[in-house]
Image (cartoon, rainbow, N blue to C red; front, top):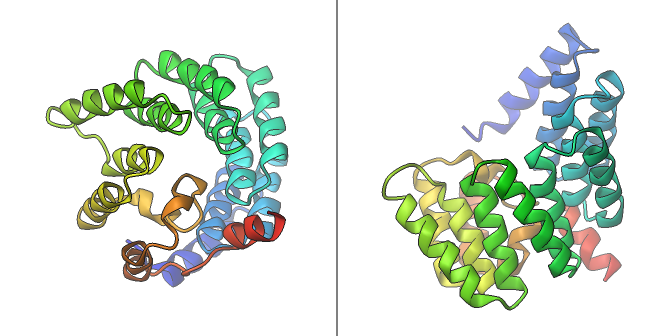
Length: 233
């Protein structure tokens, strides 16, 4: 509900009640990420990993936190270790594909993305991420085919507009991307909590409508991850 201060209070209370509860540490880390506090988030995320080292979702979440903090090589290493824990967990390949795409390793990103799609049984989020990668790799035909499939699917079952927005970012069509993010706002999509830290939408950050959405959701207009990426480039 974008009630950031109330969320902070409740997360802290949960940690007071169960400081060794791995999931509470994990989700407080997710909260800290959305506030742009990446070092705090990563410390807390690694705490959750220490408490439950075999949790696949927590191991992936460590990679996700590193990804959103701009620490791409570390994130890839973390996700490779997660693959070793269970090579059939599709979420790992989804985030790994995002990382490989962000670092320009498109063929590898496509390979890992295709694994995620297959293992998830064709999950819309996995397919959309792969379509974005196809677009970024210059494989426009493949990207448009997947976009068409997902658009048709959205008329039959729920497909988050956030996924479709990402494909349009990959295609370089910022107007359509913003249009779908506006739909996310209208439906109060939970994906918007990551709007200012998700590297997948970096291409929209200077867009005035994008900045307006950040204000509406109550997120910082800049994030630690985006500043880190600027500083390291």
